[in-house]
Image 1 (cartoon, rainbow, N blue to C red):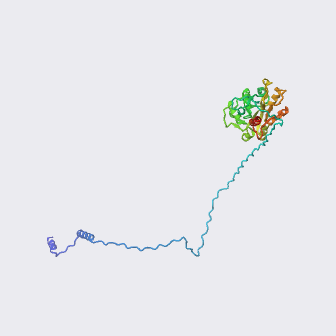
Image 2: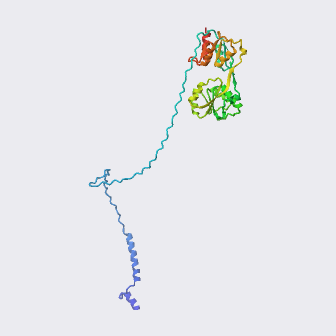
Image 3: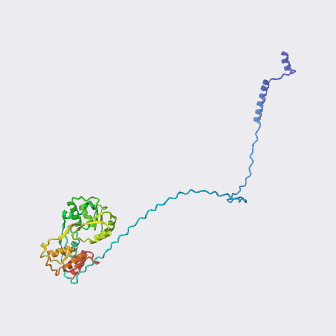
Length: 366
């Protein structure tokens, strides 16, 4: 072995290297190669500019292809809703307007043989007013004349026994038609004597506003239950028609003048009953006998004329002027063969106060 080592040193003998020795020998060479690669400079890559591409204009018109069969139309079934039978409601029937025939007022003209003497005193056949706010008292102040008041008639209520004889059941009526304050007073009087408490749901139909406000004496005033007009039943026609399902009660006097009211109620086909609750009788005027010396006597009802004839059977008119309000009062005066000097209402003087003022001013100027 010593000989071999010497031979190797001298280079005469070659020995095959093993695989392990070959691997060890190749490692440093690889390291050198990597170091060389790092040192080599890298070339810069320059990007080439791209040429601009021409953009084609897109038009809405599509090229028509020739010899191409049209596409088949596809039928799409539309879903239609089922037919629903329409329910036709009947149209509301408009109730015809009620036209109440209004008869023109009968004009009463004074007699031609009227006296034209001066007027200084005046007697009104009505009760004395409670306060001084009265048109006749104001007339007396304006014309400087004397005015007295005396009621020629007396109102007397009927008894409960007489009311029962009429066979009227108050509980069946839930609406009342009131024509005056006397009707209001005696209606509640009769209800008290019959021990009937008027229910709060009762409806009241008054001819004028004064009668409606007078109800406050007996009930609590409520507008929804009280209706009033301007003095005639025609003003209440629409309110009555809207409440035609009610049962109406009409309190009247024994000698009543509600023929026009009854005609309207019949025209509206209302259910009503007429109840006599008071009567008018002649008042006792014995204190006026021998002193009925007034320039003008004013009457408003035929009952006042009847009282005049009863209390003064030998009455002679002479120069006493008589004023009559209404056609019925004028007829009663002519039946007693008395002269009418002042008449109302008429187109020129719709009220008695106006008729008296025009007459007195005309006469007292002379």
